[in-house]
Structures are given as C-alpha cells and as structure tokens.
Length: 445
Ligand code: HEC
Ligand code: HEC
Ligand code: HEC
Ligand code: HEC
Image 1: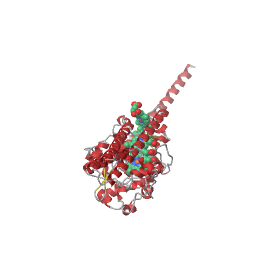
Image 2: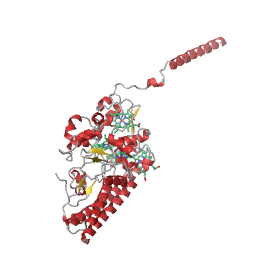
Image 3: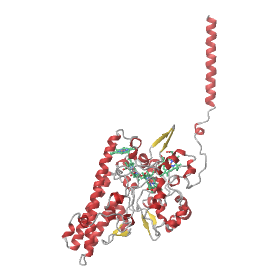
C-alpha cells in the first residue's frame, strides 16, 4: 500500500510540475503589453476633411458623431429641436431691428446639421462673406492652411460653397495621427495669443474645453473683408470685451431711428463658462458634461453624440453627482430664474429704445445727453446679448449670468432716463408703452 501511495504522490508531483512548466512557457511567449494595443488600420492624411476615413480607425467615435444628425428632442430651454427664437420671444424681433437676426434666428442643432442650417438661414444673402462657414465644416482647417484665413474670409459665401462638402468633423478638433486635441481655428489661435496664452502646453483637461472654443466663442469682423476676429485682447469678461470693441469704435449695425451703434454678441459659451463658474473652478470641462464616457462591449469611449446633457442626465451628471434628481431640480430653478431676468432686461431695453427714438425725433433734444443715452443702450444691449446668445440659459455660470443681466437692466433704465432728460420730456419715462401702441412684432419675411 505504502509503495502505491508513494507512486501516486510522485505521479501527482510530476503532473503538477509539467503543468507549471507549461504555464510558465506560455506566459514567457506572450507579446509585451504594447504589442497588444490596436494599431491604426488606415493612415489618415493631415487635415483630412472626410470624417468617414478617420472612422475606419475609430468606428465608435465616428458613429456617435454622425448620430448628431438625427437628434430632435427639445428640452425646456434647449435640446436639438429647430425652434425659432423669434417666434418663441417676439421681443427679439424688436431688439435686432435693422439687422438680419430679426429675420431668422433658430436654436442650435447637432454638429452634423451645420451645412444644411447655414445654407438655409435667411441671414445669408448675396453679400455674405465666406466667414459664415468658419465654424460649420471640417473642410476649413485644410482651406485655411492652403489660402490663409484672410483670403478665405475675403471670398463670398457662395464662392466657397463648392469647396465646403463636410459638416463639422474630426479635423475640426483632432490632429491626424497623434489624435491629440488641437486649436484649428486661426482666429482662436490669435485670440489666445492676444491674451498672452499659448494653448499648446494646456493640460488634457484644459483642452477638453479649449477645443470647443474653436467655435463656441463670441466674435466680430475686422475690415472690409470681414475677417473673423475674437475680441479677447483685453480679457474674456463681458466688460473687457465691451472696452475692447469700444476702443475700436466697432459696431455691427446702427439701430434704426434710435441711431445707436450696436455690437452683436455671439454664443460666448467658453467665455461665460470660464468666468469662474463653479464647475470650471472645480476642474470640470465641456466634454465632461457633453461627451460622457460610454461603453460598447468592453470598449470605453467619449460619446461624440454631443447634445443637451439634460437628455441623459444619468450619463452626463451622474458620473459626479450621486443625487441626479436633486441637481436637475437645481437646473430648473437656475434656468427659470435667468429666463425671467433676461425677459426683464429685454423689456427695459425696449423702453430705452422707445425713449431714444422719441428723443432723436425731436429737433431740440440735447445731442450730448442723447449720445450718452445711446452709449448706455449699446452697452446694455451687448451685456444682455452676451447671456441671451450664450447657450444653456445661464446654467454654465448662473452667478455671472445674473450679475450681467442685473447690470444690463440697470444700464437700459439709465439709457431711458438720459433720453427723457435729453428731450426734457418726462412722458418718456413710462414703462411698457411700446406694446400699448404697437402690435406684437413678428419676424420680417
Ligand atoms: C456641468 C455640466 C456642463 C458643462 C461643464 C458645460 N455644459 Fe453646456 N450645457 C449644460 C447644460 C445643463 C445645458 C442646458 C441644456 C438644456 O437646456 O437642454 C447646456 C447647454 C449647452 C449648449 C446648448 C445645447 C442645448 O441643447 O440647448 C451648448 C452649445 C453648450 N452647452 C456648450 C458647452 C460648451 C462649449 C461648454 C464648455 C465651454 C459647456 N457647454 C460646458 C451642461 C454643461
Ligand atoms: C467637437 C470636437 C470633436 C470632434 C469633431 C471629434 N472629436 Fe474626438 N474627441 C474630442 C474630445 C473633447 C475628446 C476627449 C479627449 C480626451 O479626453 O483627451 C475626444 C476623444 C477622441 C478619441 C480618444 C478616445 C475617446 O473616445 O475618448 C478618439 C479616438 C477620437 N476622439 C476620435 C474622433 C474621430 C474619429 C472623430 C471624427 C469622426 C472625432 N473624434 C471628432 C473632440 C472631438
Ligand atoms: C467647428 C466648430 C465647432 C466646434 C469645434 C464645436 N462646436 Fe458645438 N456647435 C457648432 C455649431 C455651428 C453648432 C450649431 C449647429 C446647427 O445648429 O446646425 C453647434 C451646436 C452644438 C450643440 C447643440 C447640439 C444640439 O443638438 O442642440 C452643443 C451641445 C455643442 N455644439 C457643444 C459643443 C462642445 C461641448 C464642443 C467641444 C467638445 C463643441 N460643441 C465644439 C460648432 C462647433
Ligand atoms: C466631472 C464632474 C461633474 C460633472 C460631470 C457635473 N458636475 Fe455638477 N458639480 C461638480 C462639482 C465638483 C461641483 C462643485 C460643488 C460640489 O463640490 O458639490 C458641482 C456643483 C453643481 C451644482 C451646484 C452649483 C452651485 O453653484 O450651486 C449644480 C446645480 C450642478 N453641479 C449640476 C450639474 C449638472 C446638472 C450636471 C450635468 C449636466 C453636472 N453638474 C455635471 C462636478 C460635476
């Protein structure tokens, strides 16, 4: 018996030794970790405009990007439905009187729709420059590299149409090959420089917001050729932008009958968010909320289906906030409050415009006081527009949005008082007269 036990034990030890040797041999012959990483299947040319070619290597990012074409769900103040801001709030027709924004002004939709939407808007006419394509196409980085931004902007919109075939795509945000996030818009590159900043040493987390600044920033046009310029030379706060555009005597148009030189603000999402918002201070980026990580089987990737985070708050906010219902309730309160403040500013602006028009129509109005009123109107309107044209109905930075709207309302009421003083007519101090004598405005066809 003892002999058999020894034999069995020897046998077991032999079998175990063979198995162990086999395992060791197997592990030794495994390739090192780097070799297990997927290599790009296709080589993508620098500045390649066609996103489907990049999509060969990155199918999840590509298929989520093209999903933005189909999004069509509204939220209380946003979402992807193509609502007309002018029909929603007819005050805008009055505030943009004399400027194409009074004809057509819609809510933004997903990135795949840019070409359809820019070609459909009534704001584009025969005299529109190519500048209006700047934030709409992945063909631009290549075209700018070829001809320079000044020559591009000097062309007419319809002249570059044949060269613009792709909506927003990979080349607007990534460098081919390295796939790092990059600033591709020369006007934004120049804007960072004008602030003494170079984006190249930015951290990855900073780039996850800066890459959106390629387009989601305010701008104006320089010179006859309508060169796209981002007014950050004095800083990115609304007062610093006003000071800068004032120093250039810049205006987009003169308000009919009132004579105020108005400057238009345009979606300053990056400026408002980075103006010390709670989330920005906490190190949160645009991509954290708008491009949450999602899974496809074992693969984790950033959703390139960029939409309102309120359409999937569990995915967007839930990665940081444990009580999503609670933060959603906060969003409702913030957006409702800012919406109401925005409407109050609009009513104050309309009263100011009504009074300035009346004072301007009187031959013996004091011209110096009238001009002071116009300057107050100009500043109030830009501050209001800075919040009105920014996306998120103030959520990106509630404190700053309310501060700006409060000051805008104050300046608009001061403008109205100056006009009354200029005309020496206290009847111009009346509140809400516009609607008592005029019909509710509708967009000019
Ligand atoms: C803390 C989360 C968060 C961050 C960070 C954030 N956003 Fe948003 N964003 C929102 C919310 C919430 C809305 C409101 C959506 C709505 O009302 O449906 C919004 C709305 C928008 C919209 C309009 C979309 C719509 O459906 O109305 C745009 C465009 C946008 N953000 C761009 C940006 C950019 C650019 C940045 C960075 C500069 C940024 N966001 C940073 C949460 C965020
Ligand atoms: C609007 C800007 C934008 C566009 C357009 C865009 N990306 Fe991205 N992409 C990002 C951001 C922001 C990240 C997050 C980067 C990070 O976290 O470092 C990212 C991340 C990635 C990554 C890293 C893996 C991941 O999913 O986080 C890949 C790969 C990628 N994108 C591929 C693409 C491809 C392919 C296209 C075109 C089909 C594309 N991207 C278009 C902004 C963009
Ligand atoms: C190349 C320019 C460009 C870049 C870069 C860009 N956007 Fe946009 N974005 C636009 C334009 C233009 C629209 C409006 C498109 C339309 O209405 O047809 C838009 C629309 C949006 C919307 C509204 C989507 C919807 O369905 O309502 C969100 C949200 C948004 N962008 C967020 C971002 C974020 C976050 C980044 C950075 C990761 C970013 N964008 C980078 C140009 C850009
Ligand atoms: C990457 C992490 C992150 C994401 C994503 C995020 N948040 Fe936050 N949020 C924070 C941090 C950090 C604070 C700072 C306060 C704190 O420490 O709780 C904050 C604060 C807030 C506050 C309070 C702000 C104030 O000033 O009162 C609200 C409301 C809020 N978040 C809503 C949202 C919503 C809605 C979303 C999704 C659209 C979201 N957050 C996405 C990290 C995040």
